[in-house]
Image 1 (spheres, rainbow, N blue to C red):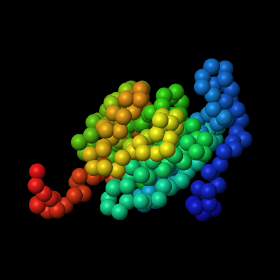
Image 2 (image 1 turned 180 degrees about the horizontal axis):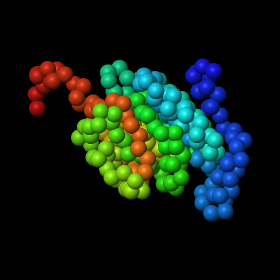
Image 3 (image 1 turned 90 degrees about the vertical axis):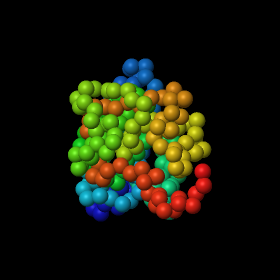
Length: 237
């Protein structure tokens, strides 16, 4: 079956797996917040410029989650950028509005270059917390000025103030105060720290599951690096 057909086939809300019933009644028995499809996740790719093996790895991960009883949808948010990265905020806003509108319990933001182990999503879904990321490392072995690639692995959950967005799982309820869109900003300077500061104001901290490691095939990019410095030679401050 062609990849396009596979993607369409799995944007669905029905899971006949026995594990799906187990997940539902576990929450009922625990007195936890219930959901029609516990752990259901919209996997939202930011763009369609796939690196080698990334899409295949994500589909394997999604199927592993489905076999464990978790519904998923897998789709690509079209690249809306005119200049590099200038519309990523709009793309991320479109994704969470879609997740809320379609009734998913979670949204997993992913970049087109990630190589997750097949159990990555299932492991993250086991945590009853609203925001969680794996450790992100880069295939060139460098940390690119970030602390996350240097975090101690296999140390359980660690609360952090912010993290990269390359592979980030959030409960859609986090975005309800911004249900009409507008949480993610496109402006230069509105980086991860700014957005996580907003989430902290709403009572949410991100966690990193140090038992899960996801590799990115390209280094992180910072929008300010994309500005040609000669364009600023006549700017007066």
